[in-house]
Image (cartoon, rainbow, N blue to C red; front, side, top):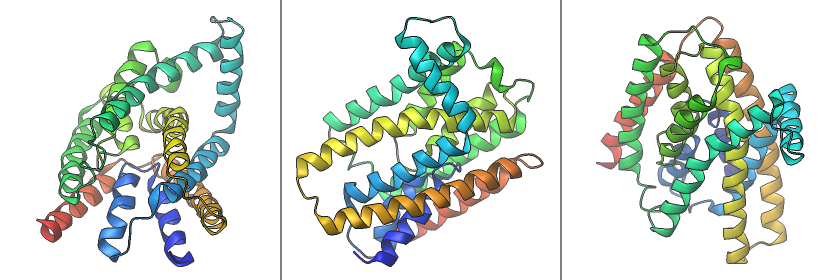
Length: 268
């Protein structure tokens, strides 16, 4: 696998991980469209690690608060604001872990990596995002995120395991249905990605260890991929949060629908 292709994958992953356009769909489609072998779990893990560090640094104050919440919870101090937020974030992550395990043991993960499925989910969930964004109120802010919201958004995040749905797209859609302001809804969705990426990374790590195919060249490629993904993700986060100050999610909806139609034309 060439360095150029690895950089291409890393930049695509970094740019799309936090945009509501499905990074996993782009990573799955890349080998199909460029007629190259699938990049494998190792590169997928590397680009996700880069994205994880990007969101943690971009939202460094919130990440430190999350760490404090984990410490408070471990010390049984459940009534602190940091602990309450940490617990809600953990609860929001449980559905995606359970659904992910169901898909894995049912042998459906590879079956869902179909361009046809991706095309349909890109279009369908793009339309749902448009409806949520256009017809929902914006009278709630980040500090009002409660346990009920965490459960609802966690269930939407679990659905996003179907490629093409988009984790950020599903959580942003649910946040808008719940009446959150666009920027605050996007911020909650981004913070929800931290434990989700950690859980996904742990699963990928187990698969890599089980395969036993790691070598020095692959580790070097993975390192390059992680660094490129990190910088691309920082750029994407910056642009999206600035963009949402004065705009809505319609451009992302248009992109999803156009890409979905193109994929249907190519693969169906």
